[in-house]
Length: 307
Image 1 (cartoon, rainbow, N blue to C red):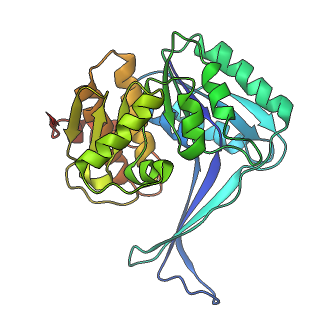
Image 2 (cartoon, rainbow, N blue to C red; image 1 turned 135 degrees about the vertical axis):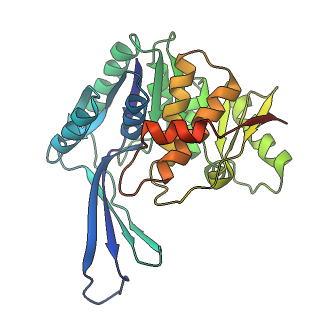
C-alpha cells in the first residue's frame, strides 16, 4: 500500500471566461470543481495506475464530505483528522487566450491536539505501507518544523517521499527521506539562487542529498525531468502534447514514482514513469490526474539517458 498524507486540501474552482474584465460583470462559460490537495492527487494517481493507496491528513467539517465522495469514486480509502471550519477554495480563471488568473485562499487552522493526532495516525498507517508520501503546505500557524515530526513518525520500513519547498523541505530532510521531488523553480527558491546551467542544477540537487535525501527527482516542466542519487544522473525528455492544464502534473509524477519505488524499480524506470504521468496529467482539463491509457501511451514513447 502507498500512504499519502495531505497537509492542506483545497477545492479548486476552474472557471472559463471569454475574457476577465476587472471591475465589470463576467459571464462564466464553464466551471469545474476539483476536490484536491497534493497528496490527495497522488493517491488518485496511484489508484489509477492499479496500485493500492490510502489517504490521510487534515480535513475540515463544513465541506470535507465532498472529498470523501471524490475519493470513494476513485476507490481510495481514507482516514482523516477532522477539524472545524472549511477547506480552502482556490479560483483559477482561464480566458479564451489561455491566460490564467489565480486567486488562492488561505488554509484553515488546526488545534495542537490535532497535530498530535495526525502523528499518531501516521505511525499506525505507515506500519502497513510500503511507501509514505507527505506533500503540500501546512495549515495556517503550523511551523515548518512539523514536517520533521511527520517524517519521524513514519515507520522505518516504509519508503519516504516528500514534495514541498523551503523551510518545510529542509525540516523533512532532517528526518532523512528516500525521494524528494521539487520542480526547478521550487528548488531555486528553496536554495535562494538561480541555476545558470546543468552543473548548477546538479549542485542544487546535491545540496538536498547532503541534507538527507537519498534521491532527487527534479521536474523541468515541459522539458522533462532528471533524477540523481549523487553518483548517477539520468535525464528523460518529455514528448510534445497539447497542454490543457498543468494542475496536478507534479503530483502525477510523484504517484508514478511511488508505484515504481514500491515495486523496487531502478532510477531510470522511476524517472521514466514520473515523466509519463506528469505529461499525461497536463493533457487533461479540469481534472487533477491522468488516465492509465494516456500514461501508458506516453510511457512507451519515452527514453532515459545517463549524463
